[in-house]
Image (tube, rainbow, N blue to C red; front, side, top):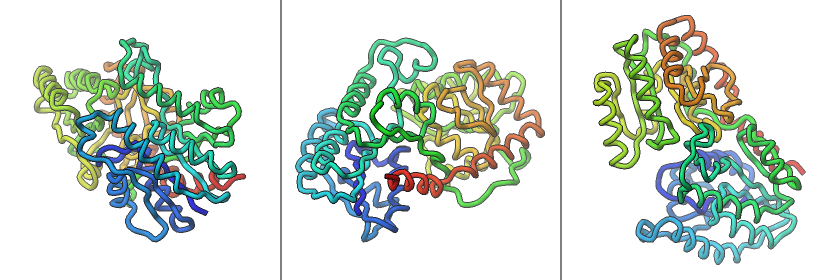
Length: 393
């Protein structure tokens, strides 16, 4: 039996949550089956660095070049789709094989559909990690009820998911990590089996962090994310400004970034709000440096207006950090070690931060709950649940 993973939309050397899931699945399944990853040459480079080399891991790749940045991502997707269709025409599937569509953009959905059509007995798995927001709301407005003029990226995403749905075969299993999406996907795919993968995700750290008292920390609050409107960074700055009125020496670490102009505006807002002594900006940080900053921190702040799951929350909890987050419907899985506040209510957000910082009892209870909750999740447990789904008849 061979398992085919489709990840042809791959761009950039950073790895997304969905791509990391593919990596974790392959690292686990390669011990039992041949895993074939259909991706770009860049994707092969990124995945090999994380999976390593194995006789049971093979790649089918399409070439991409530096011209992609010149012609734009849409036309790049068209080129790689054409190349992928030629590549998959040479694959001879066996009845026992499994095909997994790891993401929903058309460089995946079109070749996946064509190859799936060549064998009617091959098991099919369709990942639905994110449901595109309303065109007139976008990611930033979906749960804040704020409206925007239609944006190209949202229209593009909607059209990709429309095509993905249209090309989904009835024998395929619809798989999502977010239980909030389950009922919606049941309505979208009345003729398919829809399953929620639980538990999903986990942390990469290998040690438990149980001694997490306030006195051992030199960073009060840590924020991690891309500098996009949907991440609520503007709200976070307002919350810290409000918190500083009664907790003057608050120390904050911000990890992430965006375009040059966006980062410049962020730094400007820090100065305008007189927070230069309170907020330290670290840029994009990964690996041990990121883990070290999390371990030095007391609270993880999550101001996103839209998330499909919240893997970063699990990561923070596994380091023993209580979490303060907006009450997104997709965060319904997080029931302990977290304080949820009304979306966009930065004053309420600031109060929750202060309550934790000023009460060692509250902090210690939330820390214990966060660690305990995070232990329910690991990629090993995820892979066992995933394996059961792909083996079920």
